[in-house]
Length: 436
Image (cartoon, rainbow, N blue to C red; front, side, top):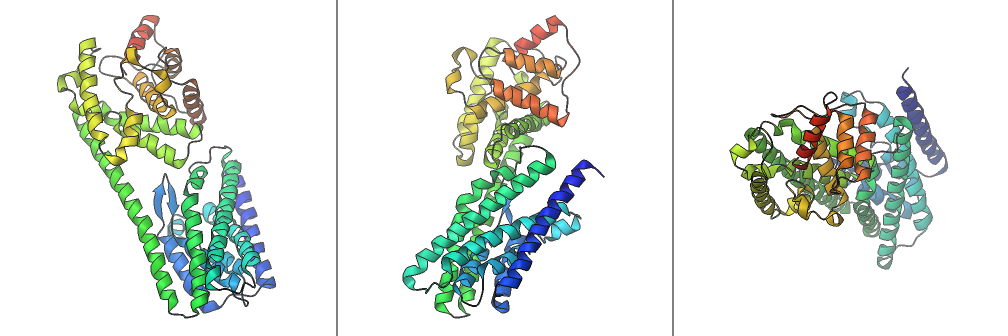
């Protein structure tokens, strides 16, 4: 059995056992919630979990947490039930997703089961402690809502800790992306906990089953809000893919170059422990970093050999005009400032105004240029590309960024570039790097 599989079994077994212990202990020690009411909320929770949408780099989010905290607040206030058992039992249903069943996944669903049940148990016990025996009135609604927000914070925090530990243990690295970016979602999680607590308290005060319909409508609107954001994000990505295809149709060299630059930048960002949001911004910047070529005369784009200073100036002017247009697009504006690494005037370059993200894009772009075969020269060996980047006097390529790229490629075992070159070829390549 592979060592990776053994570690997965250990984590899955430990987490699943922890979840089962929590469920059994709660079942034996506390009162079960009313089955019909719990079933309605549990059904809403499952539906929303199934409809989770991508809101960040490989991170899914749903409004199911709002349902979980509604149940927690409601059953904590009631004298005949417990928030801990209601939430733990509901959380146990979350990892049961058809996609995982069809793909025959076992590690993630089992580990998630234990992690979610344990987290829900701790958050539920907190609500039971804060709200048990509370004589609810209109004036105490805010107190319940704040308790829901606090429980949401605890639930999310427990999830982040347990998932982070599992990934580090199983995969042997502290680079736990995309899971390390979970804290980016924390504000929305806390808000959903606040609203969930408020809905649970409102339902208890109204004491009418018809109120559940209104609560379900609130869940629907919360889901539609997340879904709209996800669709807008997908539309942005589709627009970027369209730009890249247009550029590739004009310059065959660009085909594959943009994706490789984005990949190298992703590796660097992961090595530097960037969050999912930071990684996505870097990737988008890489996708648009070459769009300036759309305004460059075709004869310059297709020219074999090095450009003259006058030709390079012409390319830089044309590229800057495209960047100015892209900067007018709201969602592209942050990426344009990062992607503006092409055709910089090294004589006027100010290293103090250079950002880490710009250095990552510049390093990834130049590394791919150096290690790729072009129309007029062969690819530079990978080790020499590192040396070339480190010897650049401009300050564009931060040492920590180069080291991150080197460590990341060493970790993946990937090698780029050609064979060892002669000294004259190295000198010629150094000049090319200035124009990369």
